Length: 499
Image (cartoon, rainbow, N blue to C red; front, side):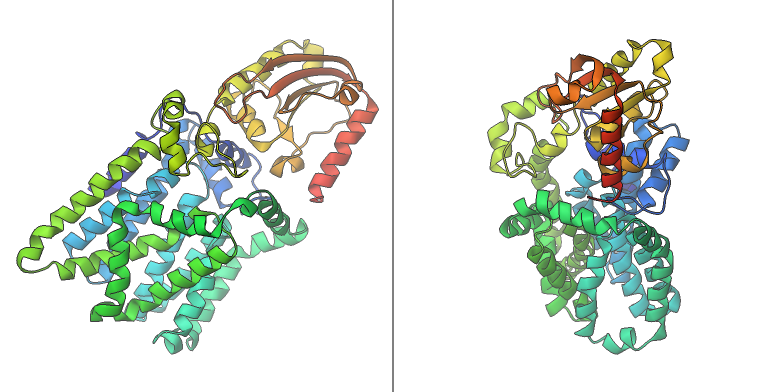
């Protein structure tokens, strides 16, 4: 319980007040206003949690609470895994420390699908191990529920299954898994849970395929396979010896032999991710179960004689080695302080963005700046309009981060912002009576576009120099002609058809 509470409370201490929410968080929170069985970029489960956040007041406390809760539940499952594998109190403490003081602290900071994704991977391992240990069908059915919910959260769970299938085929459990109807009942249950999203994908032309193609062209193309493998070492660098102990224990410690399939599943999944040039954090869900296995083995190795005195040393080593990570891997220092220590961050590869170039701040940190200023200046532009135009005003943004930020910070003070980017393309109002547009754009308005309005006024720019949105412009455009409205309608149609 102490670790559980420490995990939740600790997450709130790792974000400096200078930072706001992350670009992705605004989109996910806005999806809670438009509940559906799917979205262009992800399945629906995150939107359900976003709806709950709004029901609780939509404050930053609740935005951070749920990823912290999912992280704490992951830690609790690792504790339970150690128990299931035959570990005692020391193994539980060692594994819990390794989970607590790791890259999971970073991933559990943000309201994104990643926290539940890692929880789902860990729960899937737990349910499968429980089933093999007890042969109770309920645990295989629980695995089906976990996989179904995992797929409703993030399609990444399919890679857990892709790595697990060959691992089980090569294991001593082959017949117990593939020769038993419980497995197929679980698969059917997972499919049933996931079915509404499949139907949504069919109805909308499989946007997940389009999204993956765009991801490959714009982001994954910059991912180096060697870089992916390097990141795997960094995620749990301070407890790397526990991960190594897991593989040693699976092949040298007889009580762990039945769980060798776990090690093979990790290998197969990492090979698949490496081949596909996946982002490093996609694989983080593999490691909590390995920390549990490694802790069980180390407890056994260090159980007698002088080796017993090494036990507390290992826990202390994990904590001590985490301190340098704590100083650079989290947004717990002002942006200017991070900029001044740029070389340290560059040496760790933390300044490299998805465009393949180095910048002044880590990308995630730069994505947490400038949003309040942007929303405030958009609201100021809206106040310049006479009452007769306000009800006929469209708030249009270049990207989903801008759109979601305006809807979060200026909610009820601006018309709902929209964009032809991401899911916002489905949420446009009727354009027939639009008489004014507040435009938030990263680029200067072209003379051609400006000619379609009776009046063009740039009312502000984002001035936070370290924000990724630095220089974004706010325009007040009145008197749009029919041509520009028709052009916007065509962009909406193309966006909905994923062109």
